[in-house]
Every structure is written in C-alpha cells, then in structure tokens.
Image 1: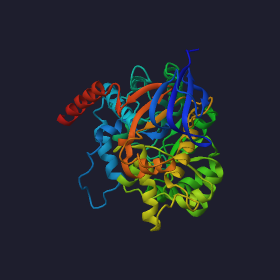
Image 2: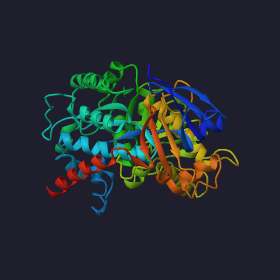
Image 3: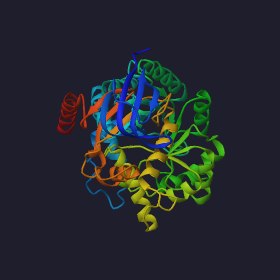
Image 4: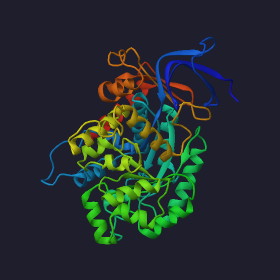
Length: 456
C-alpha cells in the first residue's frame, strides 16, 4: 500500500452535507479517512471548495476534432441526419495517432472543466476501408493511451454496430469503420479488457450502439455474454428514429427495450429524448439511468428530455458530453435546467422542493446517476471511494460571497469551468490553477492534427 497522504480543504460537500476544515486521508488512490473541523498539521492544504468529481457518462472522443465544422446551413431539413454525414466524412481520414491526440485533448478539457472520469462509447474500431487493424484493439489502445496521459478515470464501452438501419438495412460506406459481427465483437471486448487491465481502476462495459444498428438476436447475445458491468445504448434521440422503430418493430425504442431487453440498474439509455408518459414512468421504475447530453442534444436539435416528470417518477439521470462541442460539466447541467425552463415556461424546474437549491439538486442527482452508469467507485468524498475531487476557487468573484449550496448555484449558473481550480483523480493532482499539468504538449499535438486534417 502507498504511504497515506492527507489533504485538507477549507470546505467540502460530504454525503451528509457541507463541512469545514475537512481532512481526507488517501492511500492507493482511495479515501481511507474523512474528518471534519480537523487540524491541518501534516496535511497538504488546498484553499477552496471541494466537491466530488463528476463522471462524464457518454463521450465519443474523436468528435471533439470536428467541433464547429457542422455550423453551416445544410438542406432545408438540416438535422441530426445531415450532421451525421459530416461526421462520417471527418472520421474517414482519422489515423490511430489522430484519435489518440484528439482524445487526449478532449480528456484534458474534461478534467479542467470538472469531470474526473469518462465513459467512452467507442465505435471507431477499424481502418478507413473497414478492415480490422492487426491488433483488433488498436483504437481502444489509443483511447487507453489518452486516458493514461491525461490521468482521467476510464470506463471503456466498446460499441457493437452491425446494420445501417432497422430491419437489417445494409451499412453505408460511412459506417464501415464501426462494423463487427457478434463473434468479432466478443473478441474485441476481450481485447479491450486486456488493455484496461494495464490502467489504474479502468472498467469495461458494452455499448450496443442502437436498435437501428443492432438486431435483436445480436443484442441479446451481447448482453448475455457480459452479465456484469454497464450496458449503454442510444435510444429515442430523434423523432425519425422513433418512427422508424415503430414501423419496423411495432414499438417505440424505449418501449421495446423495456419490454424485451431486461433493462435494469446496469443499463444506461443515452438521450431517451422522445418518450411517452408511460415510457417515462417505466424507465424510472426500471432503475436504469437516462444518459443526458444537453449541449449536444441542443446542438443537434434533438429535442428536450422530459426531466420534470422523470424526476417526479423517481428517475435517475447522469450527464455526458457526447459530441464534445463544448466541454463543461457545469454547462451541461445548466443546459439541462434551461431546456426544462423553456419547455415548461417556468423557473427552477428540476428542483422538487420549495426553497431547494437547483444547483444542488442537479449536481447530486447527476453525480449519483453518472456514477451508477459507469460502474466506478466514485461519486462521493467518503471512505472506500476513489479520491476523485474537484476544488472550486472560493475567491472567484462569483463564489466568494456565496455559501454552501450557493456555491453550486453560482458554479453551475454563472461562472462554469472558470471556477474549477484544482482537480484530483485517485488522489493525483492533474489540474492546478485551472490548467492541466500537460496542457502544452497535448494542445500542440492536437493543433498539428487539426492543421493536417483541415488541409486535406
């Protein structure tokens, strides 16, 4: 066991609420002691407001490199589906080196923005012609390298992608880098587990891409082959997807999954934007997590998740950055609340009690849901959890006059990532004064990749 280190924070959000002069003992990346109103002697002192690091439950890291490239008006029906064609053209040129550099940049930004772990929904597996690399896990290895370099906690979610649409439609040219049959997918997951074994505290789940990309028999086989660990799937993101699912299966995506896939607490349904009231209640009762990516959902014009009714029904949700157009933990939570305000034409919609802090409700609910969805021992500053901790700058102009839950309100609704000062993952200091310790080389490598891609 490593020698125990002790950190002392001015203030910290603990499971029982806010506390001052909080001393946290850490060994082997895990919290082994927590004391309040504690002495500072012999501890590393960090001025500021400590909160648990927020897991990012849904990410396609390579898409960070195309942020801003789809902001020109397309056809009259410009939508997710036209954006997808731009994405296919972008990824066609990506090399493994490119993917590693882009992922490292995205993960660095996540850490600087208050995310301390990430669920990589990884579907870019093969070369530009759709041929597997000599190492089937080549691209997974590049994701692992980016996570290792930046220090972010990682849950691998290798994605199964078989068909181009409902009813077994043939895949398009743009999808060929994603494709595996069920047998090769099992081999891919096994290889991913080998890669994950070399990382500190990495986890592995599976990610059947969507009902349009994975036929029922293949979905069943994948889930049965991996009876433990997270299961993530895109569901009901767009109206067309729902309509196509009804035409092909006689049921809506969330409805079909709840009736046929054994959805339970290890599942995370990404987006779940378009649900009926019945689906909303049933998903909440299932114990699964709704994986919300509000900034991406707004960017793509997907629609607004029915957050108010879902919370009333006891539903669990977490947040992710998906296409990584803007990486900001507070920004995702802010967009979630603002979407509800626009939909319901009211304020503080995701708070459920009079006088309750909306920032506290958003943060703690997303923290619990994202932690569950990634299957990681994080999500709280308490004994036995990984020491994933974000320190907010108590001297920031928007936080200095606040107190307790007011700090969360100001962080989420006012200053955002600018308030993130220090970030620890497994007790290791990765971000100091808002900057990642390897920012310069990571940024320079990312710039070089984009310059080459934009010149082609």
